[in-house]
Image (cartoon, rainbow, N blue to C red; front, side, top):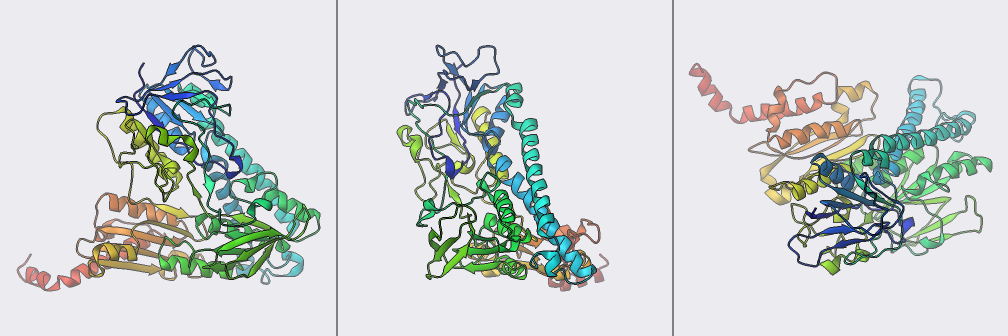
Length: 560
């Protein structure tokens, strides 16, 4: 069977695996500018697995596929599964663990840790609000960072670690394991081996954006990936306990004020660590609304997190030769030294595509994002070669990567084509309260349409009854940006518990091209957070009525 096309859809891998990403057998692409590129495999490594009776272990035969997917993350898995639903032959290539970033090091483990940290924090706040004392007694709190003593916290973290491991394995075994994928009829190329590429060579994993931090290679550092591994956070807590130190004595320097840096800073702080968060931008979450940045900074300050904005770390150095809890000094641009026991890098990642040999076949790379350039249908500059997910240099969200993987496979295999590059993608930063957004900010909408053409609906959390019932400190809000005349939603930002759910409703309204004021007629239950959306829509509706009051008076007198 002739290959229809191919897809380059690998997700970014760990900086600690900068050795070559190599499939266990060579892949070859037809000559440049061919009308129908052909992906052909010449399998000769035992780690290749096949769903067919003609196993890929034979080195004398070549197998041609309808679709070859490089990367077993969210995008690649979605593309491969989509293709199999139409009976197309698929080979999935993955050098590491199938399931991608979200299953193993991102969403699943981090949100479990966030939940545990929130529970610990809620326990403390409940004691302060309804219990005896303020929860800061030395003998109970272990230094005033919560009512859990260190022994209790250690037991909880051990259970969290076991729970994380169990969850990752369960998701993997049920959804993404080789057994499941082979059952769907896929051929798999797993692991590492010497590479023999004719037109694609030596693809490499993604890299972190910390090239300018001097000395980082000489000190142990955490990322959101190795936080769960040997030498990571859980091991550090154990070693800290063995040395007789309290959790509050373990200071963590977090570098990066984006979603990952903010989430992990709050989690580690709520679990008892002393945390300093260093943000190179002028504010936290710099791509969002100004109000969200300011409110989140106040939340962190209230919880005892030191936040330093508009400063970059220029160098790091180990202050002594200890191997356990050794001190690290980070120096800022202002020459101010920041001392800590551990440093967590959360500055983001860029695609690492230089060593793939994509230029050999004419695939163009964006020099700014370092991502593979695609058109709106996700096709690269070479006909038949598509890219989806993180490797495009676009927004790095699991849900967006999965969406692009499905669209890429659909465009490859079916007639007509859909758009796979979206201008508006909802996102949620899972701090407490959550910060969720989609579409245009107020400033972006003003720049695009003009200040007079847009309106803002704003409601602070202190005016939402559900938040009052739950004892909210009032930090948070709902902000909707819409067109003044048509009342079409342009974007929204929500900072509140379950903000991601609220933004999803607004995203659906925008996609349906429903004017904001129409939401006033959609009944919401009271006292939910979502009823605030109905109330805000009602205010927009009332404002519309006021502007047309004279016309309504005439119609009323006419008996209409």
